[in-house]
Length: 207
Image (cartoon, rainbow, N blue to C red):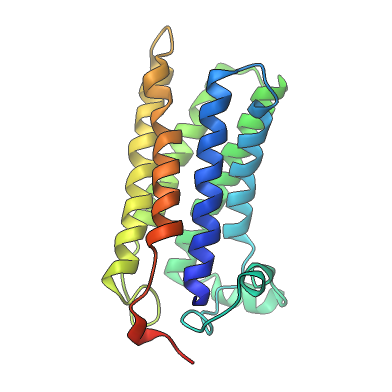
């Protein structure tokens, strides 16, 4: 598999697992799972923020472990240079939203944050992250193939719809469990889409 396919496989599997733990946590609110899924949301954001996106290996066949190691930047200067690109800014925006949402939800689960307004951080961050991911367009270097763009639209749409549903749930008393479960369900589905279906046309694979 190419570097980009492995990246999205790993990220998609992580999203699907996060959504599943979140659903389980909703069924058992007092269980330790209430700490697990926000931690994974934070880590998902971190793994969007820290990579240096030079894209020189995007369509090169790379092993899964090497793909994971490539997440960690080896040069701050290169990271700062690449972060100025529009699509990289979109990635980092989505990552920062996930990190903020994960931290706030973790603090809420631990009882460190009790402000009523804190409940809005997650749905707002989900919508903003979804818009950042969903407006991805194709260029000659980034997402040049329609299939790549489509999967980003799927994830972006899932985050926007799920965040909106969660926002609606937060406005209702008592909090409707069905609406509160929309975002984690969509995370599972979007994650599986990335993990199982994100594949680039064979013709673009580089030796």
